[in-house]
Each structure stands twice: as structure tokens, then as C-alpha cells.
Amino acid sequence: MSNFDEFKKAAKDTFGTIAEFSSEAYRIAEDKAKTLARRAKLTASITKQRTIIRRKHIEIGMTYYRLFKDSPDAALKDSCDTITASLNRIASMEKELEELRKRVYYGDKNSCCGENAESPDDCCAGEENTDACCETEPSEIQCGDAETGEDAGDEAPDNEV
Image (cartoon, rainbow, N blue to C red; front, side):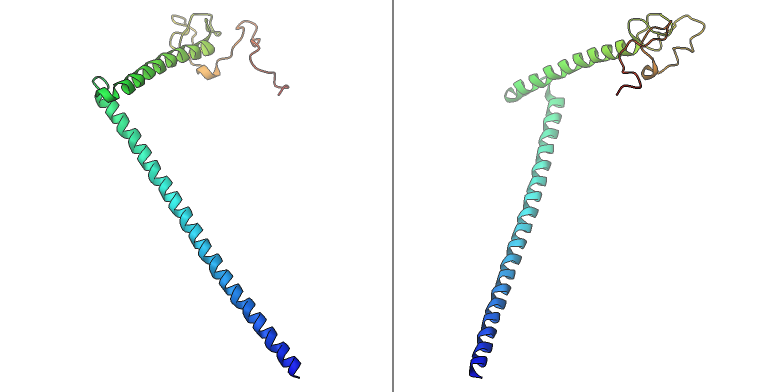
């Protein structure tokens, strides 16, 4: 029986060692998981703080430009001039874009009455029957020939996708 007792003792020692090793491995994994979670939380907090700083920098810059664009400090003159030039270019492009929108909606002549119209207010000016085109929203005006009702071909027919 002594062989069996020795076997039992060896098995108990082995299982004890495995249990200790498992316990230690679990503790190490738990510590690493906590460390990784803390790192992720800190990284997210740092990113949030940097976003706050970036927004405040933008706010400060916008406020400075609004207050001092006409007489900026020498160190910021080039930046203010660049912003002013860009704003002027944007205004010019927005004006051109609006002209193009009008041209798409109303064309050179309004398709409802054939009168020159740059806006719904100009459509059918002086006409008695203005309900056909003057009350139409620009998005509802159909492009094409007013007499035949044929489409100018800008859109695909319903059966084509």
C-alpha cells in the first residue's frame, strides 16, 4: 500500500501545484485586465481633454478674428488675411451657386409661362393667370418643353434604374 500512498501524495502535490499555478495565472490575468482597462480609460479621457482644448482653440481663434480682423497683431496678420480672403472666396462661390440653382429651377425662361423669371416672384409678372407657375415651389418645377410636356432628358425614365 505504500506505493498507493506515495501515488496519492504525488497526485495531491501535483494537483496542489496546478491549483497554485492556476491561482497565480488568474491573479496575473486579472491584474493585466485591470491595467488594460485603466489604460483604455485614461486614453479616452486624454482624447476627451484634447478635444476640449481643440474646440477652445477654435473658439479663441474665431473670437480673436471677429474682434481684431481689421487690425490684427503682426504675428496673426497673415492668418487673419488668409481667413478674410477665404471668406470672400466663399461668398463669391455661394453667390455663383445660388445663380446656378436658379438656372436649374427656372432656366433662362420659366417653363410654365415663358416669361423671364429669376425667382417665383418674377414669374408671370403682370399676367392674370399666375396660379400655374407662381405658386409652384422650385423643387416642383419640371424641366422641359412647356407646350409638349416632354422632359428635357435630365432624368432616367421610370423603368430604368
